Image (cartoon, rainbow, N blue to C red; front, side, top):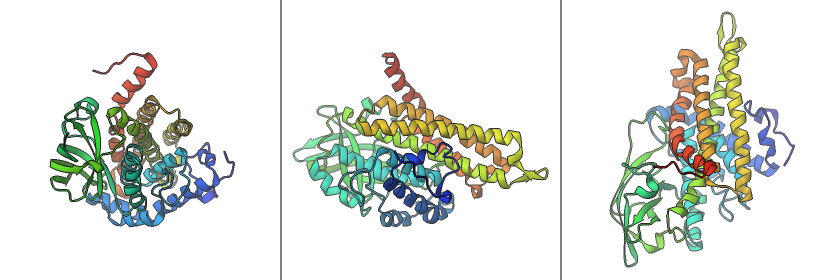
Length: 400
């Protein structure tokens, strides 16, 4: 633990209990680097591209130049050794504090895709793919969710894999797959028709039969290029099958970590919404004075700050459990369910402070309000995560 505090201009108004002071100096320096990138380079791109429902390709170059990818993985990326889970989570929060779509783009690449290869691949596969991905010369995606499936993915995966000699043939469909329209490597999960176990495959861009189509008309995460993917006799070499994935139990190890990352995103959206609402309350004048001086507005702000502070404390301890190696499914599930529920409250209270201006993209709060709905739903709904925790504490499974 360190007691060094950030310079005043780098402190967050939402960090009421100074959680960032728990980061050691070198990791806090990386966080401040990410904060400057998001503030100076990324934020000016956000609202226009969110309104246009498009992904600004220059984001890839910005992140490539920053050297922030690959930080959680020993020996890959510019920072060695691997950083703590507390920094990885706080970085996800920091990015979502500016924009949840950008945070998701980075999280899909740096988290879901790279972590799948790092955790599920053998050493040859890690060395083959991760250096390019850590440099962001190649972009990754993660394809698990299907058009006709969601929470039942463990036992109900419809995408199939059939082995033919040294080749696997994949058939099926995936939906809501972030980055898939332009990704170089897509980790596709499919059920082996011979043993009925889920396995992972890295499908490279341009593989015949792999057809990603951008999903249009979203009201949230409009910068993320989510795709619906059709796989028709997609042939993948055995060398591209993740060698350490032999069942959905192995996949669950990956989802446990990434679910925690989504909870950190929820915290970031809360903070971003609170910050713009607080700034507005200080500036907006009604009845001859700033609305921040009214009791009802202060009540909304303080309730929001309470949700942020409680959620942040939960996430700090969750990161400590990860670093200590005693992190379980129910830990990340409780965080995802609790934090995103509190996020929903905060974005609603923050939007309320804006009144009619709260529906305008110009003030940012409308974007936070809309994007919160996506974070609330993916990586396990509140209901499914509740059942995971419920089974843990009662010893009784309530799953259908």
